[in-house]
Image (tube, rainbow over all chains, first blue to last red; front, side):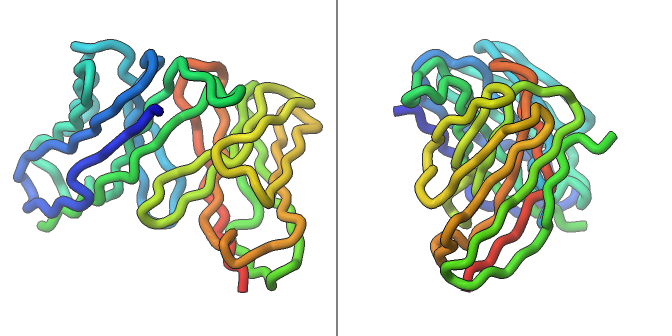
Length: 115
Length: 112
């Protein structure tokens, strides 16, 4: 069964202290790995899509990388406004009784960046 | 750009009452989804639609029904609300099977 595990569950950083969030996955044929940011009381906001091992995407202080088993979201010199929950999701080839376009989400990493 | 709009944003129901959540998207997307988000459980797919007039069950469909009469709208119904349906509900849409999903702002539902 396809599965997504994110770690750590929560991370507290000082402003400027770089770190990485992990997303481990097991899927039957990866058709995309997605990173989202979710602020309290809001819907998830799309950040990146990665499709194949070795692929990297960057946006401001965020950089997402992908291997065959996991993805990392690297945060360089974070600022307080980067505080949010970061969600990872995968889409696979597996047919879930017809739900071939199912996005499987991890439970997220709650990031707090203190000034 | 409105994107994906959900109504209402908040609702309190009594056990046994019914209600309908409305999702509207203005991006001409074929695929639409309803998720629920609970602490420690992540986002779980309730029902989805791959086009106007089509619907299908997701991971946790029991107690919910959906309809997609118009391409831009996806309705989620609760016929007889239960406390276990207390959750935050998100609607999402995507163009196809490879692109990202765009989410609405969510509906916080409490069933007492």
